[in-house]
Image 1 (cartoon, rainbow, N blue to C red):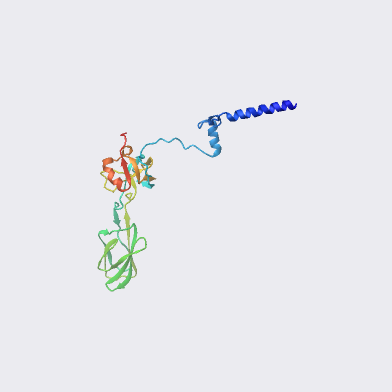
Image 2 (tube, rainbow, N blue to C red):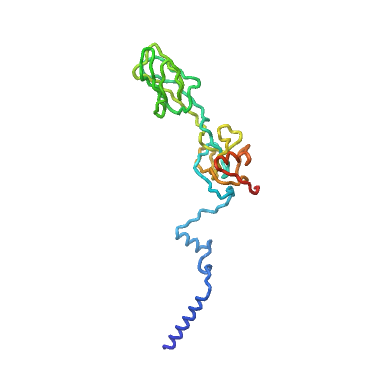
Length: 266
């Protein structure tokens, strides 16, 4: 019996040494990355697939792209990743100053100048309230829509502020809580929003300043998306608006940190 146990032990030792001497191959133990076993293991570990990625080659250098959120103007249409964008200027909106409405004591009038507004005019209500009453005279404090004081208007003298007008005295002097109210509206032309840069545009967007970071549909509504404001890009992979080419965009984009680099023509 002892001899049998000794022989078995020796055989086990010999087999163990032989196994250690054999090379190990990972393939023999790890499942293939696309095998059912691998997918099951990944699911257990909490990983999930985000779909396939097809490189489009718009990047052409090692510089990190500077990216931030922008708003595409409604009506910009369906734009593709890599479209060169322009920004709409802040002074494009038409300003309308409504007729003055009067409340209080007095029958003088407020006549708007032409134009009836000045630099920095705001959307909202301007209130000119009597501060000092007098015979055939008076002084009004003019307040802006944001609540700050725009200035002081004297009866009979032209007032030149964010709104412009002249208050004339009437047969009945101004007194008490006399005030004029003027409503100002500024047309929404998409100021500070973005769209495809077209060379013939006149609203500021004719100057290229960004590159769209993803496909986006702004056909019927403003659309928040991402755009690149720095980095190195393949000029042959970008999408240019009518009248623009890499040559016409190069300097303007360089001014905002975007460099264009030529590669194989696509």
